[in-house]
Length: 240
Ligand code: NDP
Image (cartoon, rainbow, N blue to C red; front, top):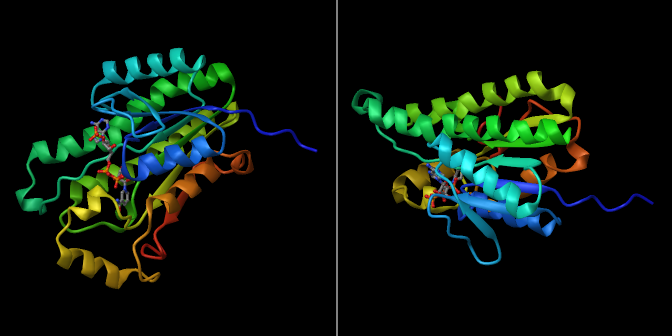
């Protein structure tokens, strides 16, 4: 008989709502000790939170210190999920529109991964899961900044895999398609309808459908998966 897996210390960035909250709940249900971050530091019911702005290195470092103190050890599972959009056509996209999205979605994930790697090396094990998007590889008109940030996560995870793969640390990317959250509810109805027509599954997904894939990638069953890009998109990005 195998013994039950030990609870791990988990940090989910942007875990106060949407996909991040669903991931945090799925991992907590599996028995892990989970802390979520958001800029406000407010926790959803039943979860613990620390304040963290992923665009600020000092804030990231402070959040990791706070999590380590509260949970009595380093973060073993990092889910880099915090993300924003700022859509507009290329010709109208300002430097600021581009930089803000890259700074949150890509550099923010890098800041968290760099900090997490220190504790994981000490622990001699760790899991990093980066929440990308189908558009990172498919591209999307009006989302040059967002798509660039999300494809950058693939290079980040694969480089981490090459650097730290021999140290019992995995780094994977999940690429969701169209998930029903605040981010997609903000889109005009016509755009939602247009997306729906392109999805072979014929529907949008619930955040829990992404959360279950992340939970698998964080589980002992996924120990030999690293540098992978796992689509959760109802077939939208097939072939990319
Ligand atoms: P939401 O807009 O519902 O949530 C975004 C989360 O990111 C919030 O918790 C927000 O926290 C956090 N966040 C944003 N900026 C920062 C920051 N500077 N520092 C810390 N946290 C920040 O989005 P979703 O749940 O829909 O998306 C979650 C992830 O999944 C994102 O990376 C998104 O790109 C990706 N994704 C979403 C898809 C979808 O269809 N919904 C599809 C593919 C990928 P707060 O604002 O409270 O600080």
